[in-house]
Length: 477
RNA sequence: GCACGGGUGGCAGAGCAGCUAUGCAACGGACUGCAGAUCCGUGGACCCGGGUGCAAAUCCCGGCCCGUGCUCCA
Image (cartoon, rainbow, N blue to C red):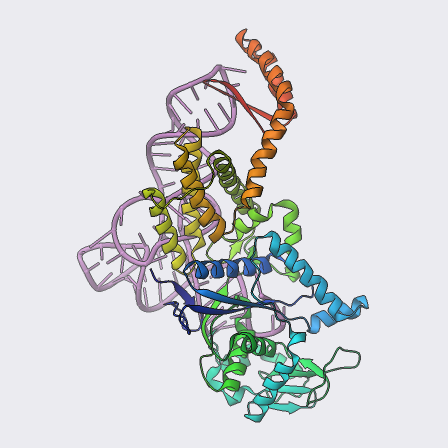
């Protein structure tokens, strides 16, 4: 079945047809590393991680580029506030990014270009734009002139030049720059004293916000490429500016075949943002929740929908993920991971999951199938089913929950979960068994208060007792 | 105001023309001294008003409501 993706520019789901047969180039806007990554960054990273995983699984070769905008106003602000070099600020936040995204099981991109390593290409592109009449040099930098290509306005957001003029309202006069029109945007910003800068034909300065992505995508993916992604908040002005720059510079359109935008993270129904005070860094979140549970939460809705990050959602994910993980690791240690292709139910589940993923990467539909398979695996384990059935279900989960969705730990780790549990169990086993024996005799003589007392004692040890038809069983919480 | 998304059971969230979504919660039953776990089962929804279909959560039109964007932002 064909893979269809929602393209923001055409506002429709379209079949993904590679420019070069068998190959897909993806450029996704990463972060500006001026502060530690927040869960919105995580959502973006996870969304595109899964997109890349699925396209690869579909048999296409993917070249995935994610950038770091490692020089910008905010980085400069932090560096001057702290009195350290701007690169120190950028580097430590990039380190943080890799640390948390690795924990979230995000597969690394094929390249992570940085602005500071792309300055010559940026300068060349700006020069081209000036030569072709799309940009002009002002007293404080170089600007792209919107009026040279008005038809490209609103390609992603549907806004017209006039709308933005109105929307900008009184701010038009506040630009305080050499812009001819407030909607023009900076390609090159002249350095103020003390700011980091690079030499250019227009004097020392640094790139404007949008040009870096046009230059880096051109450098790494060429004059036309398949997918450009990023958060939906980047559609305007960032991605529309990229369309101006790339298409005007290269002289053809479209440069990008498909624009994919992930939805935002909301906290209690409102967009998460620093100004709202409802801000979570990834590390904040990881203090409370396992990384894979966080990942589960982030894919609990299709990537374009907003995800509301609230305690109920997290608890829900924790519960469901915990069950999945327990079933998986128990099944794995019991029967290993086997082939599932001969199993009718599992094949059907795989088909449903695939058609969900093929429909613009619907991870929510995929999770339903994962939950269903995990549930039947649990039942098989409890009913002592045939080992080959168990291993088939384990193999299925390894492939889809593991490789495709990335919500399972490595087998080694999964096995260590059951091993650790078993070890902890055997360590206190004799004490627990003795107490249970005493409790059983109390129960025999209908001494319920003594029986409950012992149960409470066990609970305080972290042991949960469950009476069944075959006598009591216990497990460690 | 304009643009883009969306409004589905108690909650989260699929489905996007006909056929049980799913999970959590609730309720009933089995099992229990009680509790828990498990199993079986049940009820319950498609914002409002029109329209087009044999048939509409699903398509069209008009409202209302919510989120995001229009400024740095994943």
